[in-house]
Image (cartoon, rainbow, N blue to C red; front, side, top):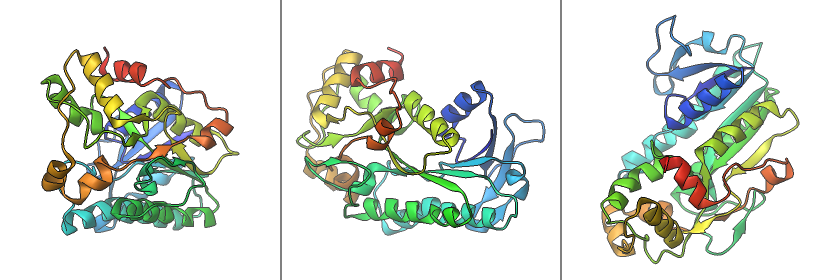
Amino acid sequence: MRVLLAGGTGFLGSALTRRLLSRGHQVSLLSRRPSTPTAAPPVFHWDPERGEFDGNALTGTDAVVNLAGESLAGRRWTEARKRALVESRVGATRFLVQRMAERSARPSALVSATAVGIYGNRGEEVLTEESPPGAGFLADLCRAWEEASLPARDLGLRVVAARFGIVLDSRGGALASLLPLFRAGLGGALGNGKQWMSWVSLPDLAAVLEMALEREDASGVWNVVSPAPVRNRDFARTLGRILKRPAILPAPAFALRLVLGEMADEALLSSACVAPKRLTSLGYRFAFEDLDRALRSALRA
């Protein structure tokens, strides 16, 4: 297949690019910084905020994967930051679908990222693709993100909304941000540590996205998570054990809220026990169901 990746230059997109190329697919990327004509894979220019798009990116394209979006972590969700997060996800997705609508020859499929944050803080409830969205900024953002991709169905595209859990890789995402603390022996549970964390290994995420591209009989919402979610305190203990460092210093909820505000409650202290019901029904077999093995692979330990 000829696959176009939006947001393909990050650690998720890079992993997917490597997998697709190794499996014989052709890959091109969308970026604000286009490449030279001889670069591999080729990079086409787009800038959704400025309405800029190189239409050559869609020529001959069979499918599009949309991974665009600024990181949710790192700083407080001020009103300005919230607008940037919405624009980089909802606005970019809407812009991409509009560019496809302008063409007579279109891709056959759109696989668009979203997140299990759509479920909000749900305590002990087991969540499947049929579970309703939760409340809060993150849930509202994910719901709007998914809705922005839906007009592609009216264009005749097969659409998959891939709800990512916490992606485990030492080169990016939540794990990369935790490693300095844990390696220094300063890691531990967040809050009371009872909240459920739904995670997925980077190799499984890339494999699931490839399956979403190839399975012409599959569409709709997919929970892209391991079938073995863990409580935050168990995640901390496992990571500390692998790194051979103590993981006994909890980060009190009040301190997290003081530093990060709303983001602390919605991204760090909320509980989402998510099941990959759709992937199971499609017969997907996870390479990493066990957290210890997944972390050791991510850390090359």
